[in-house]
Length: 146
Image 1 (cartoon, rainbow, N blue to C red):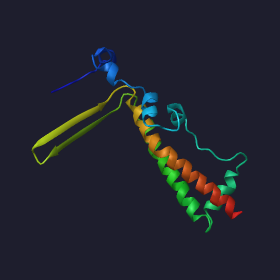
Image 2 (cartoon, one colour; image 1 turned 45 degrees about the horizontal axis):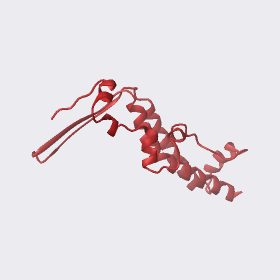
Image 3 (cartoon, helix red, strand yellow; image 1 turned 180 degrees about the vertical axis):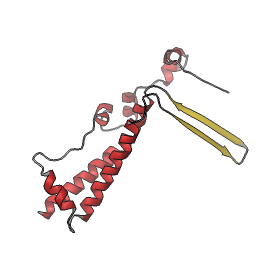
Image 4 (cartoon, helix red, strand yellow; image 1 turned 60 degrees about the horizontal axis):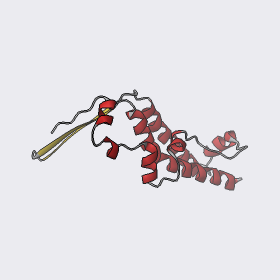
């Protein structure tokens, strides 16, 4: 069976489209996410008001600041992964091929306009809580050291 839909209007006209089409907000509700799609999409690192970033950076380079440095390196790595996905073209796609001991094979091509945003959203679902937790832990360790 080979199903291929190139035109989004063709997909919308399909008899099963109404049953299967979900918006990202619908998916968030199904997942019982505590935040909306917009909150994930617009996520920015959050530091307390009046936070001294320069002293925070200096602290990371001290012997005491090792765990904070590691935590912030992890946040930077997650931001790098996010930047890589953001740099994809709007109409990117992913091709997956596989086989099971010569008995069966699968070729999957997923993509199209808006796919980058979907990938970025899925990535943010995973990394935003980790980033927030790590930043909170690092800031608290910094405050406790003073």
